[in-house]
Image 1 (spheres, one colour):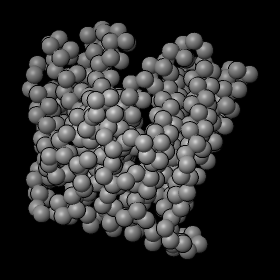
Image 2 (image 1 turned 30 degrees about the vertical axis):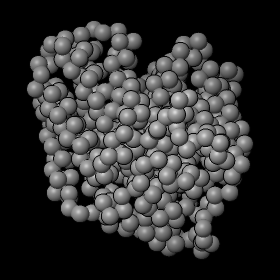
Image 3 (image 1 turned 90 degrees about the vertical axis):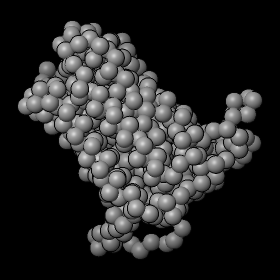
Image 4 (image 1 turned 120 degrees about the vertical axis):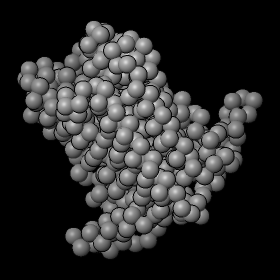
Length: 445
């Protein structure tokens, strides 16, 4: 699990971490018969389809690498190729997106992704697959994802009236978790049918997304002010402006620290779940279902988050979620790890609960950033947040094996609980009247 609003990456063991008043027809009040609603629905649909294509390709690229080379090392390089660009490029991409038309950036990113997917499909059909091309294409697609996700973050506040942002943010959060639930199984199924099918499906998904974005009526999302020509000194200065806002915001700063800590150590819980299931000789399908509990929790969390957010401040909502993490982590640490009760009930419930509360934090942060961060800084603040918290995901995944090997499953769980306790302490120390309280976003519809 990881916090996707901050990180933007997919954790190895699953998905992370709408204010809707329904009418009789089940549609949210205020989302009916408006020009922006049509555009948002097109944006949401296009992004959802694109995300499912991305998830299925993310799963199948390392599988193809293994089949082509029979080398776990090369498969690891392919996995890293898709992850590292997203981490390393977040900071400069934020500057570039803030200087550009976000809608156009998204379309160009999708066009390049579709071309790369078509190239991979052709290479598998004609040559059975080319390892070097696979590595380069996965890396380039990772770069495209950075541009697409950052640009999407910047255009939503320009597209949607502030009073309806809670619906939009929660709907986006649910979309991300649902794509994780659907995309991974779809990728495995298509790959079993034929090696080229997942990449063809990714190309088709990108093409459908391009069509959806081109149908949006509002297609101008240019920066509000003219920018100076981009030079190294200008890039550095504009990047520093985003970092300065992030470090000076008394709500975002401690929450970013806690989310980075959580992203790192929760990778250990995901590994524990897989290792213990493997020791109990559960089938791959059963292990996949257990791992998917966090994505299911995220979907449910995205549906219920708005009801909490209408009643409490952003700061209090985050504190409640982190204390929930602490209770869940404590349960994982104290229950007997050798029992079937632990594997089949405690771990999945804790893992799903972490995803459930993580979805609440994701919605809070997305909404806070959309309403309280100046629009001309939004790309840089978002990308800086994702750089720090996103870097914790692969580093935590790498460290998790050493943690479990060195401390054992029980000791590793205790360490995770201790790390979450530190996060709760950080929030408690920072719980003074903060900028977040002064600028509380409006959660009512």
